Image (cartoon, rainbow, N blue to C red; front, side, top):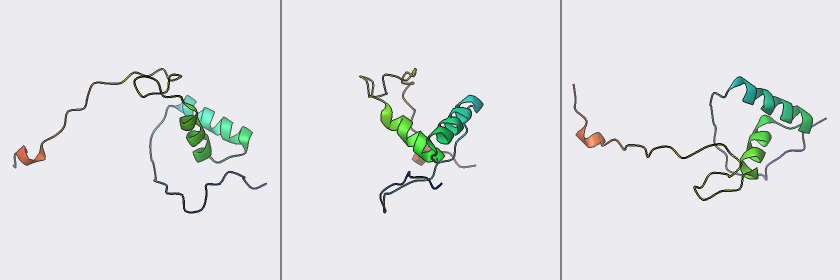
Length: 80
């Protein structure tokens, strides 16, 4: 049986490569098997299901914003 999960033709996509905890990978595999879907469809559905809260992160996520990232000024970088 072919998967019925398709993006509209021409939808821009980007490649991602990341490491996730083994339990998260197992859940992605489980959900994909239950839905007979590719893994990307599970990840996209999970991201789109969140409702952004006051800090911009989905309220359902147990996540807080981190410290602001320090910007590197490459023009001041010393050369060896």
